[in-house]
Image (cartoon, rainbow, N blue to C red; front, side, top):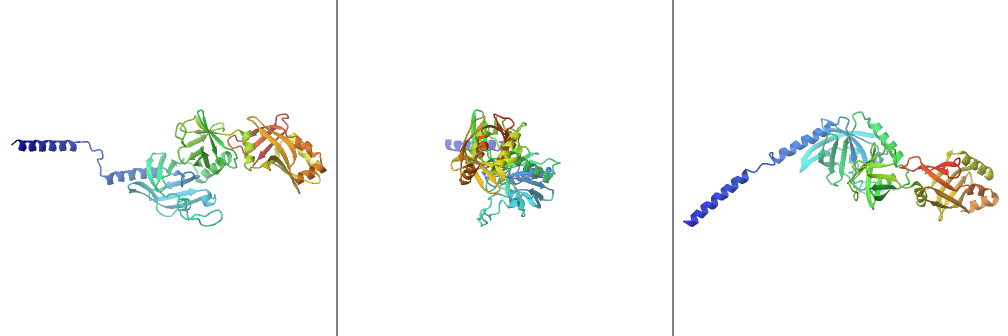
Length: 411
């Protein structure tokens, strides 16, 4: 009898416990299929809401340069895309194709029919600089999982490579062709032909960032690809090792910094121009003296040099590094002569001290025309002032002893 009572009580508690379970709140009130359908509708609505389209900040893989692509999604599953980059020989190109937003474990944006603007990055056939087929291409994606979507920003993730892609709403009045003209101007000002490293500041910590002109920054041996925006640049992923994760930077009002949008205390500056100038020559960068932008004393010296070298005609001057010495090359209409210098720099100046001949032509010139030494010895200590602080590709030399002795150099 006791055994029967025990079984009855056990059954009662089991049923009661089961009833309690069924009274727990339903955190997922809709079936999975319906929930994903709602997600499709939501993300599709956001895609189509930008009537002038989106800037798709595309990276094929991490650690490679990025490509700003423009994309406008219409109500009939057509997408119009445009680009102007190395994949289309830097010529503006636009094409319309099909797209879809669908369910595949999560909500996915897929570019369904071939569109050369974006499918070029997923094409497995790649061409090397020698023209040989290498069979890898850019190894990028053309299908993306939605991570988040707002009126102004959609975050996607490549299905294969897992690279995060940001899409920013394009201004309603922005002309597409003009957008790429703006980026080209930005690149010319900030990075094109730039020989210098950037310094990443984070409080008391500093990191050297090289490679800006290639659109791939190397920071602590890690490559970070970036692309230009209208106000600065966007990096392929958040920089590690800084106090606040950040990947977007804008140019400061005085054009001296690239400031993090996440924290203004994190920013890039150029390295000291005096050190950069000499260091760049060690890296085989040659600097040409501008034939027009120069002060009266420099013009006077060049006139005297021309008279001394006559009948040869002085064509140009070049600062470089050769055979273990900093050097100045005098290029005439016939021979080219190299003269050696000792060169030192500090935070405020660069100093040149003539060492004499550097090659046989220099020896021939000095032997026949010893007055050349007057020109060579005229170069002493200079303050360097770049036209654009962040870039340092066009630099003004100003003598510390004679304000009329100035000239410009460029790569």
